[in-house]
Image 1 (cartoon, one colour):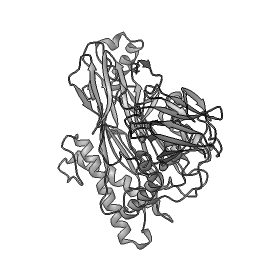
Image 2 (tube, rainbow over the protein chains, first blue to last red):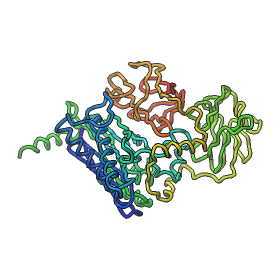
Image 3 (cartoon, chains in turn brown, blue):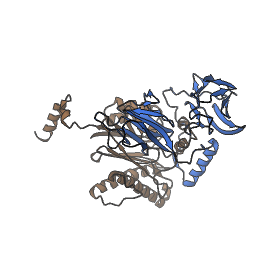
Image 4 (cartoon, one colour):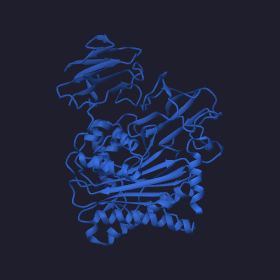
Length: 279
Length: 240
């Protein structure tokens, strides 16, 4: 799989500080996004700690697969899914410990949506109301469930999806990293195929735009970073009431195999590949 | 906002607001207004706004939908009307204003920006209970229902497939939930996406048919819907 990615974060039009944080570790195909909460600058501390912990834990595990796994893992999961879930548990512990130690950080927390692509397998670990989507066949497939009160009410049939969008309780989360000693992490594996586009985003995007707009923007802009920037701009045009963070990951096919020679342009690419090492 | 109140023997069973989406009425638990009575069809009727007017539409139910004692297939509703379905009746309150229509391109501007907060376990329980009391939690909640694709016809490796993934793929891929066999079958023919309000089937490289109609985008699956894709016929059911 050929993977190209880009990410953009923006403070939005209303808030004065950006509590979102993201990291793309391109060589590993690891993508991490977090939206922090808590007064003063503590939301920023929490989201940065979440991202840093997850990336570090995953990198360490690559060098030494024997590094302890935290939290519960399902036996059927791949190593990367286990590691990503473990990283979320570890981030929870670290944020919680920091808030316990520093009285002024009381109540800080963070969402986490992390994705790790390994060949055709996509691992996701998720806590909170940031989201992961896969754009496939022109529609956004949602890969995560929001751990928010309104989403839970929709799942119980108490609210319709349309009512949830207009609720003033949207900011009430049921799960976040760092708010309790233990956290339940949603981890799952998915198949990805060529032409899929993975999107990770904070709620600053999904509260401003409807899904068909997001899908159309992703389809119209082939450059991952520019697509992320366009989504951020669009959310700002709509008011930008919260911080906005977007990671766009485009999954492409590697032109391999006999038949790839028959495709237009295949020879040209092959020639370029050959020249890359020498000259 | 306009609302429907489900009554049984003059007792209020459930109340639902009518938003921009149709309100489904029927025996199946995936309805917005589930009516637990054998005389009621799985998907009996629906109520929705059309050009600013409230409309009830019978969904080919076995025992019919009645508006003020008149059997109807489709009728406009007025404030104070009663819809009769079996022994239940539904009071129509259309005194509120009409909702923002679905085709309005933009989302309404987000309401006041509250700081994000997290509920602890006790607060969460209390809050859910409160909310449940308001909307009377669906009588089916609590029972675990597994969405399942049951093979009705065609060549498949299993008789049925329980959907456990948020994105269940029907295709040739070895990681597909429903694995298709054969030379020219696509990796991803179609997929079922779990959303908060239900399960949606969407096209992949092929366009599935739902209840014999080809779909043009993601469609929410109802209990008992029949899906046709790449020579397979599958029934979508909730298993307890």
